[in-house]
Length: 157
Image (cartoon, rainbow, N blue to C red; front, side):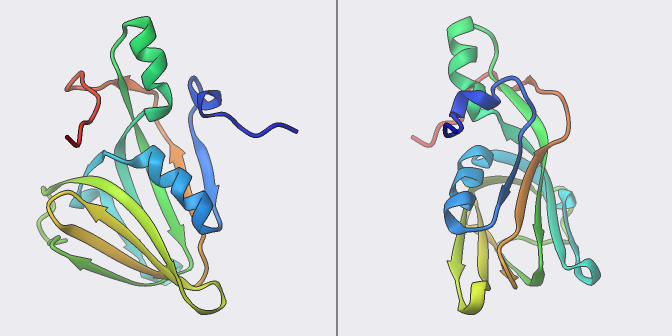
């Protein structure tokens, strides 16, 4: 069986899971530069789930879009973390529901027995730390892709 290739997801909605730090790096690369508001973030404490709904840049389709000279795309996607024990925010006011956030990175610091902390880092020095009993993360596209309003590839330079 061959490994999956980046371009394999070009025309299909993503639905990926992460159970270790390496898997999470793949999800982090695909959701980098996603845009959302604080209203799009939910922590269901009783269900031990943390979720966000974001406008994800389709990195996996970027080269194909450029070759075909068509607009680059975004898609609405849900990032779901299970087995959540606690959530802390820094530089983000969850009561300000209209704050626009740009997700830069997701990292995992492992602790004892598979537990650890997932950190979502946002532009402008915002961060959300999510303590988990075990790493269980899902990224799933939930709409059809649409042309990115800016028409541009995100740039950090």
